[in-house]
Image (cartoon, rainbow, N blue to C red; front, side):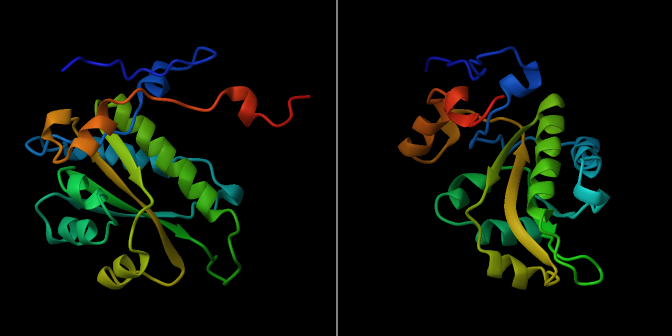
Amino acid sequence: MTTISRTAVTSAPIHEVLAERWSPRSFDSSVEVPSEKITAALEAARWSASASNTQPWRFLVARRGTAEHATIVENLMGFNQAWAVSAHVLIVNLAAVTAEDGTPLRWAQYDLGQAVANLTVQAHHDGLHVHQMGGIEVDGLRTAFSIDPALEPMSVTALGVLGTPEALASDVLREREVAPRSRRPLDELVLLSA
């Protein structure tokens, strides 16, 4: 199979960690992620910016081979179950949507997204790969882990060492793994630049 560059073709230079970051579906199930790299990724998330410093992010972290990892896999939707099982770490990303006094935190989901982005960049810097999944069974995760009603499961992060496209179980997944990366042009995204 021909190796296709996964480095983003950008309209302006960006940091190589960002240009080289991509979301694979193939993880090498034989390689464990060292605990210190998991901690570094979570620490990067911890130091993310947040509105009024509310830090509304929470994480459920499960390593492959544990009952918790299997439970997260069971609560993924569709074909995510087929490939995410090989990731060494699955992280349920939760947003604290209300303050301790019950006040809604309107920006909590935004802040969680920033924290997960920091986690992703740190993991990539440390030689790991990450794939975010929104296709999750929220109620199933809530029940399985007795999640507090003030916390909203938003996504699951698969984290691990990159595997080969050939390791994926279906032609569709293998094709997606090697397809060229694409983004909308910047001029479609910037609605006003005064």
